[in-house]
Image (cartoon, rainbow, N blue to C red):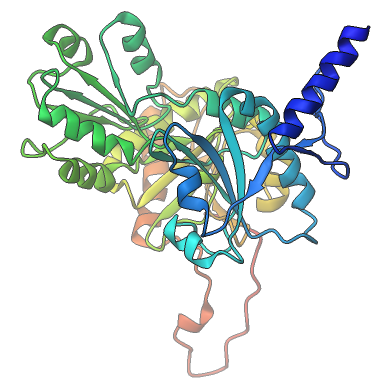
Length: 417
């Protein structure tokens, strides 16, 4: 066993020479992997305004930067530290460097990198691109995502494998596909526009008529956006051929009506809606008959309401994919997720929702009742969009009757139409 001891000693020497020290006070573990252990070495460095740019934007570097306002006495500190250290143990061997930025102290750096005040977020800097990670803070999910980051912002489809990759992303994310002459200025502009959306939107291109036909593009210069759960693509203006024009069009249309919550996009979707946005949460177990019927109904709802993209947002959640969160969500919204499909207008911060009365739809025989099911849900959606169904319970806006004075009403944790 002498060679094992020598190998271990060699590892310590290498890590020490690289400026990596032992983190004696931190106890972390890779859950579920008995042969994988945290070696105890600290692989993170602190960045400040003085050294940030020259560090993360240096040539041929790959950096993971955790922006946080977690103080040393915060109870979450060890949790975040373990997440970073376990991820770094795997990915430093693959050329990544790991850093932290305290946004409470580094105000100007926070603004430079467009990090919201009080927000904890992770940015990856690679080959001159900045990519934001919106997934759950779990080493396995993060490392898997990090390994899958493409080398280029645009995938050129020129074989069946590329085509299969493009088609398999249907309903998973927003995709942009364009048809260009190889080496053209327009393709270069398209690629530069794609850089700003890496990690958020998948960009593809074809450069021959053969592959253009296979993806449904008819002319050189044609660019389509395929949004999840919508049958018809959106077409970029024929005049769009510069980076700025592509970016403006994508930014304007990138919000789909319905998206599925995943481990990779969790914090991109599980957030408070914008001021004019209506957020609907749909719990649908796709392994059950009722769940499949509800999913098909929601597909139609999303497609028929595509003109409300950016205002109406439906978050599709399969409870089987988040077993640890089912009890949390049931307590949060006062619903029974395991009972069957549930859809509701929600406010995440306030932890409240207005839930659709599922007795209005017949999911036992969805073919026979397809029209009436659609009409019931669409009517409910229309009332939400018009404001007649709202989470705003501010009674101060209601006119008071002359007499007697109104009795204050208590808030309910769950409401039904």
